[in-house]
Length: 242
Image 1 (cartoon, helix red, strand yellow):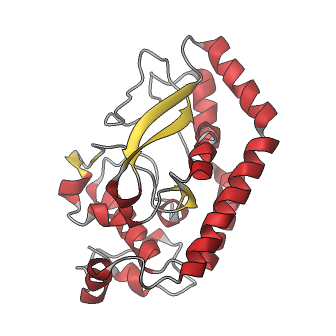
Image 2: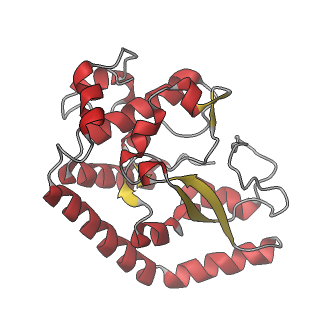
């Protein structure tokens, strides 16, 4: 179910308030049925992958000392591996294993991802709260980007069996798996629109998927750059994770 967001102009695609809940348009449905790789040019995907490799490899090298320090601090604060892995949906509906810094007590974590984190979640450690607030817990996913499981920009990487509004995402939004036609991203248009955090509200959960489908239909290398710049700006000024 795409929304009026498919008609957004360049000036409002990042605005969550512009998302309206309308039926899918026939052109969008035909686009997915005919094959998602047709409309975007091959060169756009080549540039996207090249950027993924260059940025992720460079970032991992530069941030290596910080990554080691964070891992040590996590291990000092609580027992267990500093890294946390989880099965999530990847490109073409394949299941991939993603990596994050562990932000919860090892014995209290949920490897399935079905039980979502809430504000002031008692499972989260003090260091983990900081890592989540600053999104530093996501840095190990640069390895997933480098190996090709993920991209810097794309639909958010969801846990298999993730709930939204108390329902499976697939039940809440029938066209949910259409978002998996592209690699999941560290960030995406939904996050740029402020659609992040718990998915306890069905309307907000649907809006996320609408934003993902809009991104896929209108993918371009330039749009990826705009989302990356916007993400850096928003995270430096108002990190929202918890």
